[in-house]
Length: 437
Image (cartoon, rainbow, N blue to C red; front, side, top):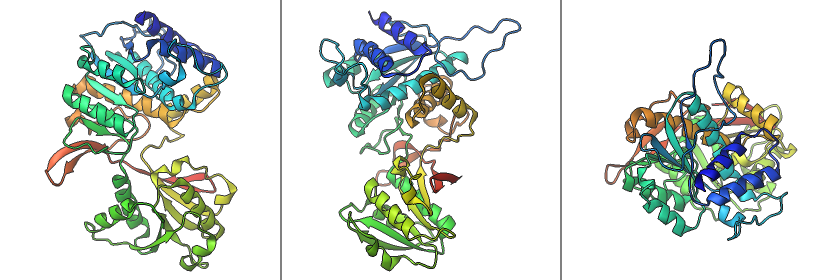
C-alpha cells in the first residue's frame, strides 16, 4: 500500500496541467492516505544522454523517481517535516472535509515547501546524488509523531529539515540531538530557548541578529543623523534592549531618540518630532504590522517628494504591500534574511515554470524548500552528518547566501546552536525595489 501511495504522488507531481483547486484536493487525498507515513523518493543517477543529445543544465519539473517502500541502508537519509494539516483536511475515514473547489489555506505553505523540495530532488537526481528523501506532515497527531520518532526506521535518518513553529523546533532539535544528526530549521526565526545543542541550525536569523544588523546599517548610512525611534505603547522592550546592549560594544554611537505612541495614534502625535524642512530618519521598533503600516502612511503624508522621509523597519515588513498609494513619497528600508534576485537565472526559470504550469507565482516557501534541500543535501553527501565544520561551504547555494555562524553561550562558553547571520536590506520607493544592500 505504501509503495502505491508513493507512486501516485510521484505521478501527480509530474503531471503538466494547471494548479487548480481540484488538483490540490487530489494531491491532498494521496498525502492523506499516507497520513504520517513517509513519502520516500529514492534519488538515483540519471543515465548519460546518448550521442548527439544534450541534458538540461537545471531541471525544474519533478520527474518520476525510483521509489521504494523501505529505507535503503546504502544511502543517506533525509527527513523533511512540513505543515500539511492532513488531519484537519480529512476526516477519520479519509474523506476530504471541503468541497472540490476549496483548498485549506493553512496547508498552502507546507505544500509549497514540499514543491520546492521536489525541485531540489529533481536537480539532485540529475547530478547523480544518492539520497533517500522522506516527507512527513508535522501537524500529524502527536501519538503518531511519537511513534515515528521511536521507530527503527527513523533512527536511520542522517539529516532533518523542517518548516516549523517554536514547539516543533524544540521537539525536532531534541530528536536530532538524540540521534546525533543535524536539524535544519528552515523558517522559524528564533532559538526557541534551545541551548547547548550543536545539532540545531537556524536559517532565518533571530530578532537579535536583525537588530544588530539594523544598528550597523544605520551606522554605515546615517551615523551623523538624528534618528527617531517610534515604539508602540504596550510592546515589550526587546528591540530597544537589543539596540542598547549592542551599543555598549560599538565605538560609533547613534543619536537615537525613543518616542512611544499609542496603537491608534494620529498625525498630530508625530508632528513634534518630524521636521517639515529636512529629511527625517525614522526607525519603527515594533513588530506590529498594523502599527507599522499606520506609521508609514503618516510619515508619507508628511514627506517631501524631492527629499523623502526615510523609515527603517522590521524583518516582518515583507508582508506589507508598499505599492499602495498611501505609501507614496516615502523611502522604506527593512531587513530580510532571504532575497530572491529577479535577475537570477534559476529564479527566473522557477517563476516561469510556475506561471506556465500552475498559473501562479511561487511563494517564498518554494524557494526555501528548494534551496534548503539542495544545499544541505550536497553538504550531507560530502561531509556526512557532522555538518558543523562545513557550514562555511557556499558552493551549493542557489538564490541567496547563507552566513552560518556558531552562537556561543556567554555564561557557559559553550556552543548553543548555529545561526545564519546573513541579512539583506531592501529599499523601496513607491512600492518599487530601488536597492538591495
